[in-house]
Length: 412
Image 1 (spheres, rainbow, N blue to C red):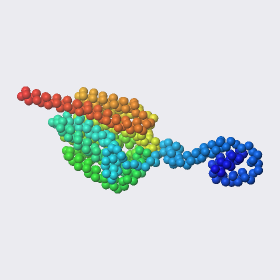
Image 2 (image 1 turned 135 degrees about the vertical axis):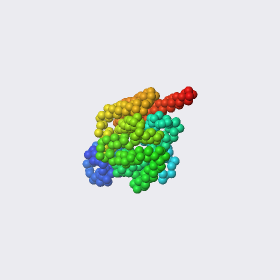
Image 3 (image 1 turned 180 degrees about the horizontal axis):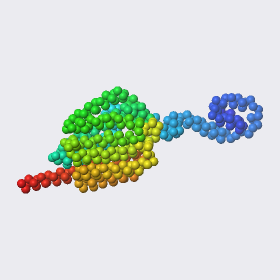
Image 4 (image 1 turned 45 degrees about the vertical axis):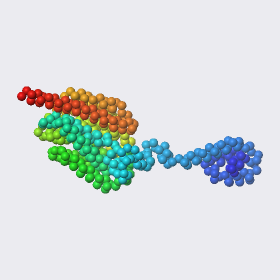
């Protein structure tokens, strides 16, 4: 009130002085000045309404600046700054119904994000369906289904173990990447020792599943652990860690053959089919993980993480197209080696070519959410269509073979 009374009798020079940021502190000295200065009464006073309005606006501006949160100021200054929002426990989905003490471990193995499990499972299913007609005698549908289910349970376990190993390696990098900063180890919800112990438990569970297959699968499966453990290191020393990820995630493209009793060392056609399928799946892994890497491309630069997306940012779509052509070509060669029929070449090869072409054309590599959408759905589209073509080809050959055998028996 004193400030308004003082302003109403002040000349413009003094009223302007009051509009400085320190006007509140200067109010009392200026009121004394009004009383002492005999020239003030002769000066033409400014309009009280305009001065009061200025004071009100100034005060509102000061209050809004004071109330602005540090987060808002930081984000306004740097739109790429990492968000400072705290971790909040899941309130929907599978994780929301788990006991609170289990949630960090479920997050560690990405139980709520099954896409990685699907990507690990697809090559196992591909090789099982491609190997089934080569088994002697030809594998029955029941054995194919049983083998596929065992592979799926193994994919869940080993994908979780791989995620835990990855997070242990990246525990000092994850806090600097917005997508990974709230992972359990990065935020301190799980200590590295507990994560290591939990990973050991998963590996033993994976071994128990592996022992359900024929013995030769043990010798094919164990070497893959070297790749599982070394992949996270690759992103520190090379711009092409996706190549190692491809070798790791594609391992199942070999496993289906010994799982159905097909000896790769004694069957040249099966060995060629397995090798070509493995190479084809490698190209697919690099393709989809290159899209995945674009989600973190800005944070990876700051954190010093290397990826193929950083090395070839401007040429990504051309490289994706080349990888797709390579994948389909090698897939077709694998089918030819295995003696597959039209259902495979039209369904698996043709369908995969179509889904990959649509994805590469439509994915927006500058939009992290769009990259994630295509990473998730591209997995289902391409993996599903390849499996459907292989499954159809196997069933046609199986029931065709049964018909021939029944005709032979009748003729005898």
